[in-house]
Image (cartoon, rainbow, N blue to C red; front, side, top):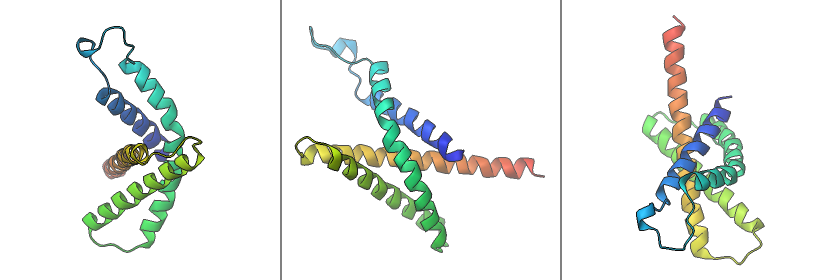
Length: 144
């Protein structure tokens, strides 16, 4: 259930950040040109982010199982390993999506999508870490 909540929150946050970053204010728009509004972009990004985030949630379970098998005493090293593995998983998911794309391969477009994938994976990771921390704090507070 925690991963479902993490996935939903990550999709909402990623869609919001993307829509905010690519929003063109009315004062800067060219005349006779259509621009997507914030909510149009948000809904578009939200809908198309669902499958990659679900795939990422499934892969995150595998990543967490791998990390649990590795004995790491340092919290920073544990965090760094998670960061690297989640970013690598994002690269793999984006690569798979590009394999199924029937258009011509453009390396610049691929790199942009990889960057967005890494950002999305790191949003997911940090929300998951925050929810885990909140869960532990609530257990400690109310289990006494």
